[in-house]
Amino acid sequence: MKTDTLVTLLSLVLTLAAMMYPHDPVHKSEDTSGAARRGEHLLIFALLTATLLLRFAYVFRYPIESDEPQHLHVVWGWVHGLLQYRDVFDNHMPLFHLLCAPLLVVFGERPEVLYCMRLAMIPLYAVVLWSTYTIGRVLFSRRVGLWATVFAGLFPSFFLCSLEFRTDELWTALWLLALVVLVASPATPARSFLVGVILGAALGASMKTVLLLTALGVAVLAAVVLTAQSRSQPSLRHLGRCAAAALVGFSLVPLALTLFFTVAGALPPFFYGTVEHNTLPGLGRWHTQPAQVLFFPAMLPFLWWGARTIGRCAPSTSIGARRVIIFLAAQVYLWALLSFWPLLEREDYLPFYPLAILFLTPVILALPSRIAVRARNILPTHPLPEALGPMLVAVLEITWLLAAWPLWRDGTRDAADLLVDVLRLTQPSDPIMDLKGETVFRPRPFYYVLEGITNERIRRGLIADSIPERLIATRTYVAVADNDRFPPRARTFLQENYLPVGRLRVVGRLLTAPAQDGTHSFPFEVQIPARYAIVAESGSVVGWLDGTPYEGARFLAPAPHEFRSASGQGRFALVWAQAVERGFSPFPLRSGSP
Image 1 (cartoon, rainbow, N blue to C red):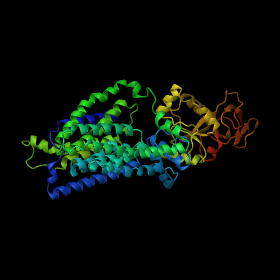
Image 2: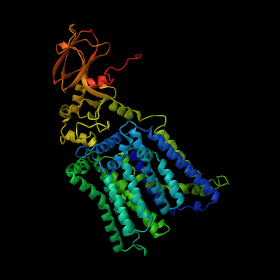
Image 3: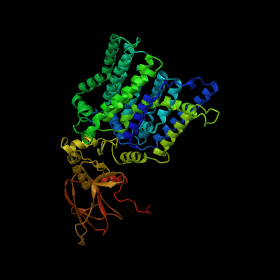
Image 4: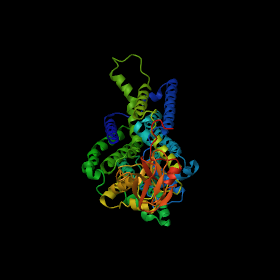
């Protein structure tokens, strides 16, 4: 099932549950016997332990997504004194990369660093789960908070996406943490200031925070309207002071980042990378699905109905207002995303999952008892354990998770082995032409990463495909394997002038004779000056290169050249000499070769 379809269905189920649930879902099972309560807590502890163990296991098995090495390459740039946006292109906010730079210093430049960085995301995952528990405990009950933590932690779409090394992990953790501070106690200017600081840090991690702030503003306004008749409602003056304090706190991190890049003389590239590059008219769904903007207004009546039901069923006005804020913050964000965002990615939904699951948890916990009441004539006379229903849901989630990506499949090897070849083949100063920085530890000859927005800008002529010229100017001898995400002109140049040697390509070409005239002459042309070697598929190479005996690798300038073989028939290749010297070959080993 596609992610956007899944979250849409989850949102609709949540909205219907909110509208149809006629009473406050704080369960009588909170008052069960001490033995039953301890047994349930042990079960929850066991499930959370299993979640953590699965988390560790999937770090080393779940496929490396292309954004992960891209983020790591930006972190590598900071470690090596390169300034994000000016020296290393990026279209994300910088806080995540700045915070991760010390981790790369500690872990070092090694292929296993991809796993290390994934492991470093576990504390952020823990923050999200703790925040889910805290919000659930404040809004409903301790039992709801605990089970919501289990359900959210094991929910496959959230579990798998959140284990990746990406800026969205920090963004989601900060968002949930801000909501904890917001709902844990009555609003004060000091707490509002802290909420603002955390949300400002979230903006420092992702520009999608703008959507979250819009959703939160709508949610707070709706909560104020729905509780307008309550005597306990804060005065407008108090709300104004809290809003002002939040605005001051919110401005701190964005202003600090802006000031930093201004002082560094990189404000224009900072603005381009974070704002201008990503706001391309007619991009993605803006062009293919213009009717998507109707989703948001169409859902507003249902969201209002659900929020009003939630507020009225709460045990107090204060709890009702907080529930309305959390419910609408999640729902308005989701439908604004589906309606107005041009490119939808899996990670965009990370802030939605824990809050949606939190509101579904009371319904899940209450269903067994409600079913028993309605079907008491056909069910056994002995009541079923209260934890049976949620336990079955957790087991279903684990089964779904293992089906989505079985643990016996290793999806990380290609990315890790690529880094093995990068470190083995190249020197630290050797540039490599890749798509998005997936070779991590080497400079890139072309400024822009070749992701969807960049390729669309190249297609429209807004960015020049100057990759061939950059490869020549920077003497880039290594590139990643062929991929249709390279622009057509660049892809053709790479195919004509680079030769596969395992997981990478190096400058060179297979040598072919123009005709079988018995002279064994192989004319070729060099575009990128370098030291080249000639290798044979079998046997040694004997012959003449440009009229002189070939005795080993030599420097060749850009020009036509000719190799004449004196060793008979066979396939020959011109290869960057350093690749040959480090054990790379354009000819794959035949079956049975040593």
